[in-house]
Image (tube, rainbow, N blue to C red; front, side):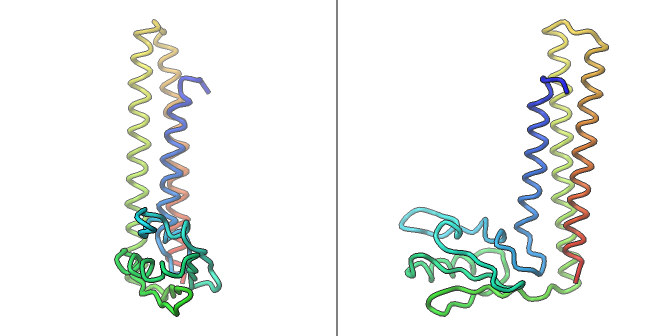
Length: 184
């Protein structure tokens, strides 16, 4: 691969990694500690992720247990979970908070599958935008460095192959997550 394409390859890789991270925050009927990634609590004036202020464990397939290192944070964590769009009521026994994930209904599974597809399409758009930027950069480089049309054409072909490979990766990731959600 031409070294001029490496920054664009990195951007495409980051887009795919971001999609995988976003999929981790979608709950699919099983307990996944990553659903808490976007929930922040006020820890002595600093907004911190739950994983930074508590021990998060999955003792059962459909339960997350949160044990804060500072017991005074129980109410704060409980409040943050209630205010999030997680859709699960936490139970607090004074020492730990438990989140029990109910089985997803068929309707909710379909909604989540649509959300997965939409996030995947957004990632594909990001990849295509990177392709456009790469092609523009190649054309500018052609003028600045006086590259031949053959070289520019070859670089554009490489960009297209790179784009196709990442679009395929994203499609596979979408299929994987959709299957996970639709599995009862």
